Image 1 (cartoon, rainbow, N blue to C red):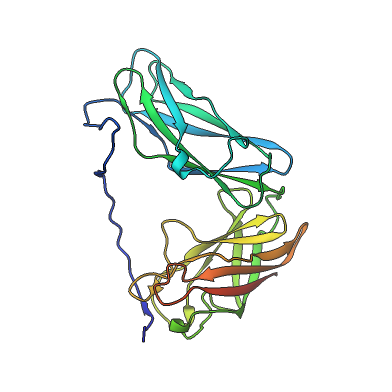
Image 2 (spheres, helix red, strand yellow; image 1 turned 135 degrees about the horizontal axis):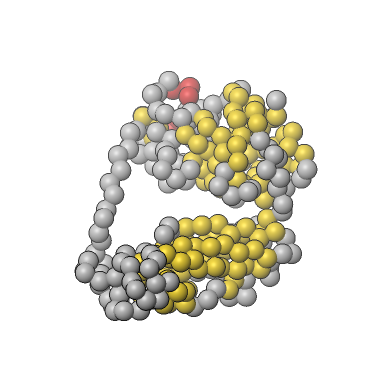
Length: 280
């Protein structure tokens, strides 16, 4: 029988990688063109359009303008071409390291389920090469959310769910006060919480994220770079549930938060866990 235990995770950052490819290989002596970041979110209000700027850089400086060619990584793109547009080339001005690529998205069949646009760099003038690291744009339809909506102190209460390996203990505790704050996207809310507090482990609190999407609360789980710190030979992760929680548009007094618990199944089967958030 699996027993739950605290897990401390170290991180290993790889500076280089080796993979089969027919693309030019960067050997350190050439100019490397790259995206300054690997992912972003492009929120489009219902029946509207929006843009996002993605920074494109070069590893060297030049006395002349340089053209960088960019295309869609079709193998990793789910978004229909009718939803997005962007120029196939951008120019890094002479004497500069960076420029911006502007991606436009329009609510042409968009839904509140994110669509993925994966971009890749094909080439740069002057014999340089494009980085093999792509940039992923998550395109999603949203309803406008005021920056003050669902912000402040809330009581977090466990309703149901849990996993057997944890004795069905509340994953985020229960009857506690949490402070909701805006995240990086206008629809995102984050609160800091200790996972599985009833075990008394020394795991550090983590930031839990969810999105307010046109009357539903979509769980994102613990933010990147943080962990629950509790697991069965690993660290339990959380994510969106098949059926999300809900809130009333224009009223942030009460919300339900429903998420998938143990999404990597390190302790057993994935569970669906439900909470309420009540504003104080």
